[in-house]
Image (cartoon, rainbow, N blue to C red; front, top):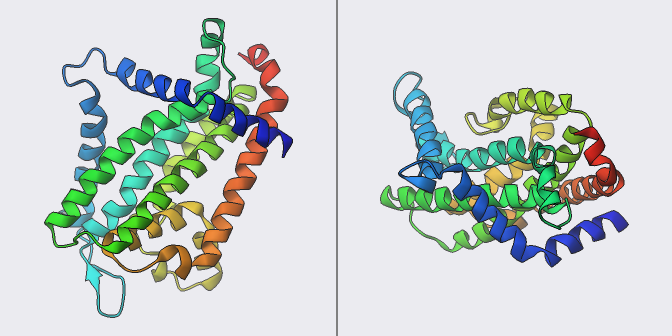
Length: 274
C-alpha cells in the first residue's frame, strides 16, 4: 500500500501538469488537420454508425432488448449506451499501455514522475468520452428517453470508469515497458473484448449460471449496466446491485495497488528497457 500512496500523491501533486499535458496530447495529434480535435469525435461517431448499420438497422438487424417485464428498447440505443464506454476503454488501454516507453525521453526535458504519463494519456481520451456521452444523451432525449433523476449516477459511473481504466493502464504500461510482447498480447485480447463484453449481446441470454456470474464480475459489465440504468431511468444501480459495486471497487483498488507496486519498483530501470 505504500507504493499506492506514493503514486496517488504524485497524481494529486502534479494534477495541473497532468491536465495541461492531456490537452497538449490531443492538440498535437491533430495539428495537421483542418478540423483539428473535432476528428476525435468524428471517428468514434463513424464507428458507432457502422455498428448501427450492421446490427441495428441493416445487415443483421437485432430485436429489441427487454429491460424489464414491461419495458423494452431498440437494440441500437441499448448498444450505444455500452459502446460509448468501450470506445473510451479500448483506446485508453491501447495508448496507456505504451505510454511510458514511447514518452520516457520527455523526462529529459521535463522533470515530473513517470506515474503521471499513463494518467494524462487516459485523461486525454476521457475528454473525448465526455463529449461522446453528451452526444449520446442528446440522441436519447430526441428519441423519447428523457432526462431523469437517475442521470445523477452518470457522474459516479464516469468517475468509476476513469479510475478503473487508469488503474489498468498503470499495470499494463509498466509490464509493456519491461516486456514489449505484452503490448501485442494486449491488443489481441482487446480485439476479442468487444464481443466478450455485453455490448453487442445481452448477458441474460446465457443459460449457464456459472458463466453468467463470471461475466457479471467483469468491471466493464458493471460500468455498462450502470450507464444503461441511468440513461434509460431503470433505477439506482449503485445500491440495487451493491454486491457488484463492492466487487468493482475491490478489483479497481487491487489493480491500482498492484500497478503502483510494479511501477515504483521498476521505474528507476525503465530507461534500461527502452
